[in-house]
Image (cartoon, rainbow, N blue to C red; front, side, top):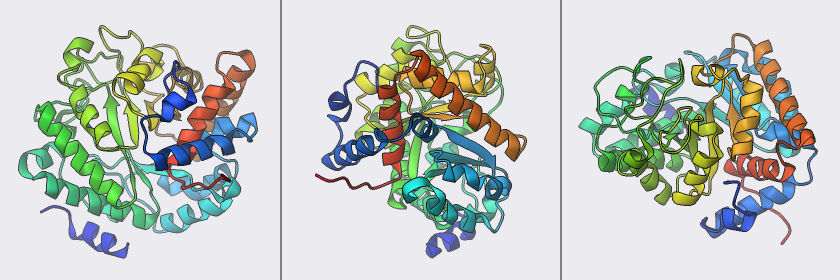
Length: 380
């Protein structure tokens, strides 16, 4: 069965531091160039604080979303929803955000719906198999259909970003654990076939007007551990050329709009977590030619805290490395959600004031965020 009847019924309702702006958009389509250029024009007129907020994602329990609507009026660029059950009021709350956001822009509203054991709100989107089960039992056409139904269900309640699909290559039939970040989250152990399936699921989401976020660059398959818990390393960079990078190359060639960095170091490339490494981000931009939105993984993860970095400090490092949008972790309360977002914004503003982060780079990042979920119009 492709998806549950609940999904079907809801569906029926429904830069790299070395790059200049010209280089940055050179490989994009003309429509993408126009939208990004317009976004940059708009963002360049904003105050520094507002530009900083655009790059920050507020992590919040879905049940608390109505209590943080003030964050929408302050101009935060995204909201990442956590929880197992979504309140029935969620669609109404999300719809109010576009009216609260400055200039009535649509912020990113994100969920983490991969399938199997990682589905946030089954009461709204239903259930479907793990990626590895889909990869071994479904054709790419069927996987696209699943992605479309999932996307339509998310879109019906106002969620416009899915932090999926997982592009890591790891065919071990295991549940994700502290030792293995992927297991069943991966479509399988074949780089070529995984690339086809990743594109299929992403295309399904896109057909429902939901932004797919392919993760975790440059590939966590067979990593030494799970970065949610502690530092870990990917396979060596030379090995990744013919393994972990293959699905990312295919996804980028298909036109995917967003990629999430991993928090793992990459032997032979960088000793830093990839999402904090300008070298790793430049590989995504330059070697793979990706021109879309680059997102961090959760910057409160064990791999980050082990480096004695707060979420705010790690966010500055990620943006300085060329990441466009920074994510926190599952908060204990809505007060913590707001405090983390505020501290992160303040740290970004201070970094620009102190010269450790340039306003130009921050504007480019914020423009990517704005353009990702808004079709913009600027005078020609």
